Length: 84
Image (cartoon, rainbow, N blue to C red; front, side, top):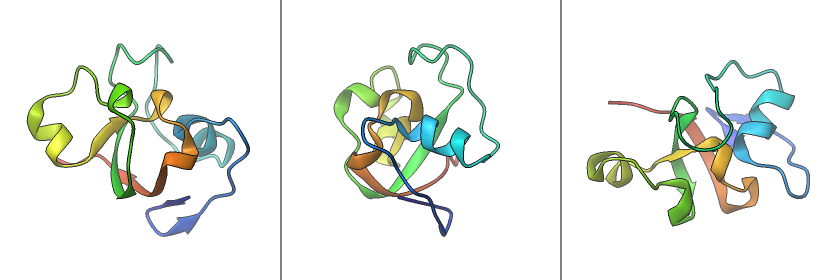
């Protein structure tokens, strides 16, 4: 998985948030349960599962946003910070 151009090693069973934190990428998070939306990031390549987009607005889903704590890292190839 890459985050803003940086290649990050993923381990089996990790979420996107776990990968980012393990690589010391500063990212907001709080509840780890997908409720607070503070770990929302954007998928540039790959397919985040629908459950990682529950609770997001239609616009956010169209832009590829998803909750990093709810998305298995093996479902997305390229990730970036959420935008607008």
